[in-house]
Image (cartoon, rainbow, N blue to C red):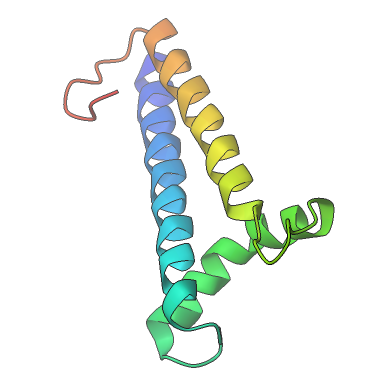
Amino acid sequence: MNALLCPLLSLLYLLVQALDLAILARVMLSWVDRNPYSGGRWKQLLYQVTDPIMEPLRRLIPPIGMMDVSPIVAILILGAIARMLADMQANAACYIGRLGF
């Protein structure tokens, strides 16, 4: 069971962390260029990857003044998911030496 569970949990953890970094990159990019449709393939890919999380949160959470707080909420949610995945790995007695969690 652990032979399949441990790699799966590690992969999910890494995907959550990558999505977290993508949201952070999107926020920093939005400070420089507000148009999501200009700037090439990398920028469009960044928006395509993060939109499935950001858009539902934007519908639920209104902006505070001119500030969109949905990225903050998304990062907090992803952090909680990452913590749960790390705890699940610890409970499954997975070797997690190189991943650092």
